[in-house]
Amino acid sequence: MTLQGAEIAVIGAGALGLCAAAELARRGARVVVFDPGGRNASTIAAGMLAPAFEAALEDAPRRTADLYRSARDRWPGFAEAFGLALNRDGAEWRGDAGALLGRMHGAGFTAEPTPEGLFTPEDWSVDPLDATARLRRALDQAGAARLHVRAERLRLDHGRVRVDAGARSWTGDAVVLATGWSAAGLDAPDLRPLLERVSPIKGQIARLEGPGAASVRRVVRAPGVYVVPRGGGVLVGATMEPGRADETVDPHRIEALRSAAVAAVPELADAAVAEAWAGVRGASPDGLPMIGRTVTPGVFAALGPRRNGWLFAPLAAEILCDLIAEKDPGGEAGVLRPDRFDELTAG
Image (cartoon, rainbow, N blue to C red; front, side, top):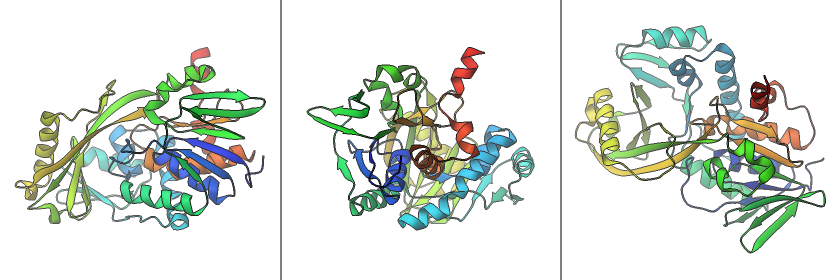
């Protein structure tokens, strides 16, 4: 299939969905985005593009660290194409850093010890709210349609893909399923085994304002917390609560995050919680996103990135565009393909 003029729907408007939609539109596709609006897990995130810390904190194997790095390296070109602001100030760790420093060096990342812990220039960030607004603007300028409804049903219809959303329906050449945890509510029987592999992980995050916030000039990480400068305050997060799909803010969890932030950055001792949010991430069984073809012809997945939706979004967009256009998507696509768990089950 050629992307020029192809009719493609993207279900979902988080990091994976918007980046895929923008890239598809840039390559000439006629894109429709099912965007129910409001906040989602991507918009309440801190927007960290953190291959070094993700790999080190997880003690990930080298192949996973290389995948994180490769995903991060897609960002400069993608950000330039869509006018996104990319913060490349690096990130620091405060606390005992011996094990983390060794893991970063072992995975080929640049990192150096500091009096407080360590610093790496390898980890970057974006502002999710700003990036979301700019991507939506790019879609509008490209003539893409954004339907402010939630997709409810997905079917094949005489060789084409049909999406039903209340009283509205759409039929076209291909669909990218990027709904996050809400994929579980989609009526698509053939995709049920895939959708059931996406498990919820609740995350809570807070914004602190007041004295000491200006002292945080780049991402600071410490045991159990990160602190990200953002718009005159700092974002402090984030909890990881597997199996929970509610969006209720727990004041006790928020206070624990604030206390951990103050332990890492004592200058924040008098800063107050200005806002707090909760969202639900979708995660695959191995924590890596599921990107690629599904068992339903014309339906492609972009699901389950756990806490790395923004990190993987440009790489996912590239893979999806190549697969839909029936081009070679590169080696990363084989690692991330959605059916990789089927082989484990069969074995």
